[in-house]
Amino acid sequence: MTRAWPEKGNGAGAGSGAQVWQGQAGSEEGFLCRRGCWALEWAAQGRGESPGSLEGLKSRAEPALRDLGELGTVRGRVMVGLEELRGALHTETQEQKGCAVVLNPSLTTLNSFISLLGSLGDISKSFRDLTDPAEINSYFAFNVTSALCLTATALQAFGARPGSSRTVVNVSSLCAIKPFKNWALYCSGKASRDMMFQVLALEEPDVRVLNYAPGPLDTDMQLLARTKTGDPEMRQFFQSLQESGQLIDCAVSAQKLVNLLEEDTFPSGAHVDFYDI
Amino acid sequence: MTRAWPEKGNGAGAGSGAQVWQGQAGSEEGFLCRRGCWALEWAAQGRGESPGSLEGLKSRAEPALRDLGELGTVRGRVMVGLEELRGALHTETQEQKGCAVVLNPSLTTLNSFISLLGSLGDISKSFRDLTDPAEINSYFAFNVTSALCLTATALQAFGARPGSSRTVVNVSSLCAIKPFKNWALYCSGKASRDMMFQVLALEEPDVRVLNYAPGPLDTDMQLLARTKTGDPEMRQFFQSLQESGQLIDCAVSAQKLVNLLEEDTFPSGAHVDFYDI
Image 1 (cartoon, each protein chain N blue to C red):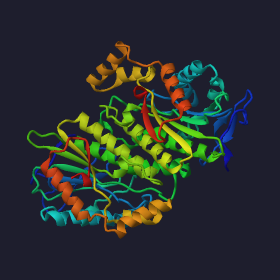
Image 2 (image 1 turned 90 degrees about the horizontal axis):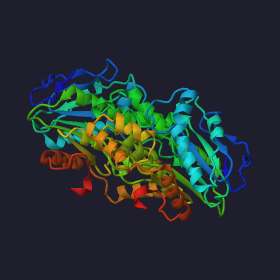
Image 3 (image 1 turned 90 degrees about the vertical axis):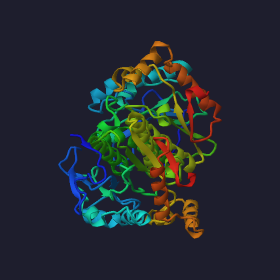
Image 4 (image 1 turned 180 degrees about the vertical axis):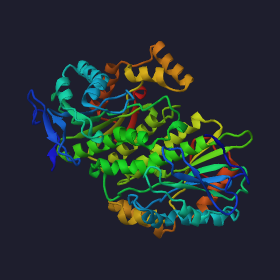
């Protein structure tokens, strides 16, 4: 089944109620909600715990929801249906956890699927402590498999339409290209995602692909970084980021992302960092 | 439990019979065999099938075994116990599949753990076809989780010794840094591994870490590449590599790796390609 990437006012859920699209990823569970021209694939970000119950996921969702709220604040015309997002969470299988919310359709030139999904992993551990296959498999299932399968499913679901562009944004990190002590899982997961989205850019020339590293955002992920990272020097580094006011407000970074998408001049597949622009 | 990284003649299995070290990765299954100063973590490489029975794994093992044989041929004094390797295969859990063989102890300056594990994945598929979480999870378990857990376990088992260096080699690929159509899984797996070994290099300054890309080896992996890659242009590219004699003999690449390790001047954590040297 192939659907057109939704355009302004064309989404089935363009009214007040988000509609759930039934996914193709081996499940009857729906994880895409449609409303307008933006689709934001979403999951708990930056908390490091393994996914659990729906309630647990909702509680971990707050930082990501706040980020989305900031994004809404920036643009005014970009609105996130937080309650609908909460209602759309699906947890039956870890791999398919996540959902998509569709934002205000006034951004008609942006038909974007944004992959925000991620967790830090246990940053108290060093590489040599990572001997439990179940822990590692769980991390990659949640952070890499989900991003790949959800994006692939969305691309199948919303096919190319003449005159209508599609953009896929992977929320990346400096960690995708630079190693950090105690962050083997996070760094390797982000590197893995950057690369698979580069492959997507090669394969699908009509899809615009961006790996956007939003900078050190002032979220709970940074709180974890400065308190839980095993290496004391790294903890101090993250602490100093906060104390010197170098953490970035989500709204500022979200604005840069919006600008990038609107200018639409990045090479498809590029890794673009907040500090690059 | 911490053991010294084995030196010349110091390995418990320095005689004719390989000894199995009982691993720590949540299992009583042993997957390290000790004999001398080199440990080669190993698993079926380049066949693309999902791992299965012990017999199936053995049959898929042949290309990797041949590579190791070539390595032995190059040096003369480097010998791989193929029969012992076969006997040491473990398949109870996918993540822990693989083993280590230990080579001739005459290379006393090289106390190296070499991670060769890998598979291509289904290269008939493009990114947008990768919607099955079970397939993706299986790929990363076999190609990333195993490499991490086996290496971490080896580092725990064979601790630092004054005056004795330890080297970890990740057999990488150009695909770790350059995307290829239809190779989303292989590229992202290799990128993920390169990054986690970079983190290791940061965390363990007394361990020498090398990401070695051996070039396009004349193995069954290239046969798969030129016959099974979904994109016709990519298939033609791989075909042309063979037809123009650009595929590299395993022995030649293995010799370069040995030279790299003996010279021991690479920056720890570096990605070094066959063509760089």
